Image (tube, rainbow, N blue to C red; front, side):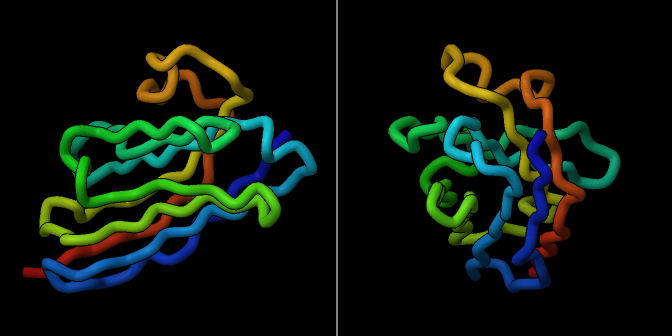
Length: 127
């Protein structure tokens, strides 16, 4: 069982940066693959980024590639999402999620593969 708590959301101007954090409970955090998804009002949940249990593999959605970076610190039971060059269209609730790894690459982008979810943190980018 893993409990996830996101933080770091807020209001930022277009072109700015934010770093989201997701703190996980439990002693087996390093066994879990971690992902970030986002959902804007009226839209479906969208894959943003994911990282393997070891941190050796990372995955990005096309809309954030080159601007967002996912990382993890297994000693701190925390995964991060560094978001740079933010755009108005990045406005959404961002969710942290986890599943017990390892897994084929295709699993990381599918929200249905994730068993545990945080409550979400709001990111608002103004023009």
